Structure formats: structure tokens, C-alpha cells
Image (cartoon, rainbow, N blue to C red; front, side, top):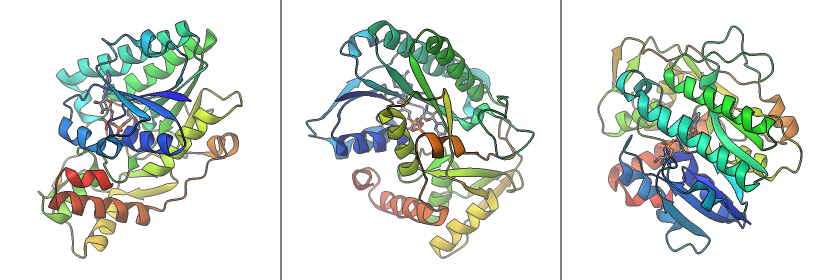
Length: 323
Ligand SMILES: NC(=O)c1ccc[n+]([C@@H]2O[C@H](COP(=O)([O-])OP(=O)(O)OC[C@H]3O[C@@H](n4cnc5c(N)ncnc54)[C@H](O)[C@@H]3O)[C@@H](O)[C@H]2O)c1
């Protein structure tokens, strides 16, 4: 019962590592502690696992590591490691997206196939859809049309997975739709909104606030991921994983204000390139095949994230252990 989990120190990966250990797995976590955001935050994400005998950490980048060696005993595999974020993928930053999303994924898939692993569950993204012609987006009916270099690399990840799938490796891509909750990455809107409501700089609203997202609470995203790993059915190549809690940025700003008890300081700016107008997931495939149902409402999840952010403001890193 061993699982190799890449990106284990990140936002989603650290929650997933805890869930897998609670389920009885031995987790070999892999992470490069890249500096896209403060690596100290990633180390803090792993504090709850300190001393855990069923967790070991392999620190390194998948483009350099001996990946076949890591997979020699054919463990279960969940591949979340990636360079996330839409805006930083434009311009000079793109090379790290190619390295950490395309090259790293190809090395994982190649090694998984060479060692005879059964299945690779990996993180894709709602970004592969771009601005769709109709909503909600469905895996079968909505074409991929990414609007950012980041989305292109996630789409390439799916294309690579399809190549190895055709060669006999079962690959299952999870198109996560805006995941939020405690430990959310510091570049993401809800973390910055909570910080603005607490003590931080004003929240920069990019655009008119009417852009909307289908929000997914992190425990629900984690639950979908373990279901994809545990399933003994033959699974389709991709699933939408969306929480079904669609809201505009303006609505989220109001919600954070009502949780905080005062309005959030805002700064208005132009829409950013790469940001789509809307995301919305048709999750009937995941509900039917994985028997998955997201259970956390936006109000509940945002209250949990706000409480975590408030505690982190008082004791910045150690508090993350309790998240
Ligand atoms: N958070 C979201 O809303 C969201 C939405 C859609 C898709 N995703 C995808 O889910 C996954 C996890 O996202 P997250 O928000 O937890 O991001 P994160 O940045 O918090 O976690 C990713 C982790 O991967 C590590 N990493 C990056 N490249 C690596 C490499 N080449 N080798 C080893 N480790 C490497 C980083 O150090 C980081 O700890 C990513 O694949 C991301 O693209 C996230």
C-alpha cells in the first residue's frame, strides 16, 4: 500500500498526503520546493506529517530525479507537481512551465509505463477549456481551447497522457476547477482577499468583478482524487472536478466581507490577460463513475479558509500545522 505523490508539499498535495495516510497508505512524497511562492510555506504545509512513520519525503525536481527508481515496486501514483498560475506563464516565465508541467509529466509517464505501473492519476485543470462557447463544460462536448500558456501546458499534459494510455498505461486526468481552502497558494484570489480583509494590502480587482468561477473546496478535490486512485473500474481519460459552487468575484468579495464583519479594501485595475470570463463544470461523469459528490458550500469553505488565514496572520508559519 504505497503511493508516490508528487507535489506533496503544495496546497492540494499536502492535504492529499494527510488523507492518504489517514486511509492507511504509506506515502512517498516528492517535491522540489520551487520558489514560485515562499518554499517556507510548503515546508510548513508538511509540519503535520513530521515524525509520521508512513510518510517519507523525496526532495528534488522530477526532471532530475531517478523516477524509474522511485517507481520500481509499482506503487500507486498521483502526480500533482506542476508550475501553477495563469498570469506568470506569460513572457519569460514560460520556461519553468515547460520544465515542470511538460517535461516533468513526460518523465513520470515514461517511468510509470517502463516499470509496469497500472495507473497514473494526475492534475489537469479547468484552464484547458479557456472561454467556452457554452456552460457547463463537459469532458465530451466542450473542446479544449486554453487561453494562457499555463493552460497550454496542462492541455499538453493531457495529450502526453493520451499517448501513454494508448500504450497500455491507464492515465486519469482530473480537471480541477479553482480549488480553495486552508493553505491555498498565496497567489490565488481568496488567499489575497482574506489577507486584505485581515491586515494586508488592498485586494486588486482585475476587471469589473463579474468574472465567475466554479469553486471546489480542497477536501472535496482530495476526495475525488482518492476515488480516482482507488477505483477498480476502467476509468475514462479525464474528469471534471468542480465543486458546483459558481460565484462571481464580486460575490466572493461580499462573502469575505460578511465573514470578516467589514468591507474588504479594494483596488481596481484592468482585466488580466489569460483570465477567462467564466468557468463551470458539468460533473456528471465524476458523480456517476467515481460516485463523487462535493459536500462543502462556498460559505462553509470560505469561512474555514478565513479562519485559517486569520490564525496564520497571528503566527505566520506554525499555525499552518493545524490547518
Ligand atoms: N489550486 C487550484 O485551484 C488548481 C486548479 C487546477 C489545477 N491545479 C493543479 O493542481 C496541482 C496542484 O496545485 P496547487 O495549487 O496545490 O499548487 P502548488 O504550487 O501549491 O503545489 C505544486 C507543488 O509541486 C512542486 N513542484 C513543481 N514542479 C515540480 C517538479 N518539477 N518536481 C517536483 N516538484 C515540483 C512545487 O514545489 C509545489 O509544492 C497542479 O498540477 C496544478 O496545476 C490546481
